[in-house]
Image (cartoon, rainbow, N blue to C red; front, side, top):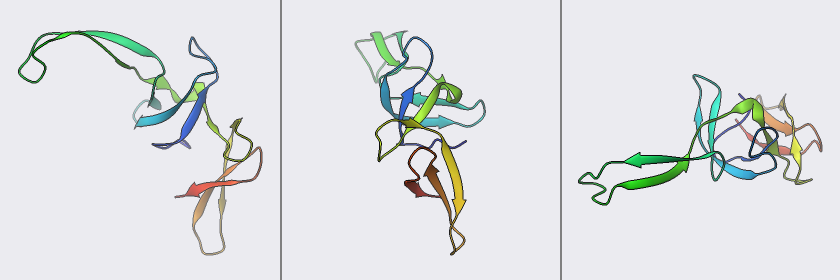
Length: 105
């Protein structure tokens, strides 16, 4: 998967289309992500020692990685990711839209 934790992504399909957020967690088994502020769900929780109040808690639910695109740092728009190898042997993620390097692996 080309998306990593702390990447800024934009949702391209679904009810939250157009929203942007930071990737909080990558779930590799099913190619799913948890994105900050996207696909919020309400969970009814019992009072526990850790949370004596209980009640309804709102939190993010996983979203499919195919429904998001990484934001290009140069153009500030959604882009695909390409991988290139540098002369020193390192792999880099590159924005397909602008050619700007995103970060190293």
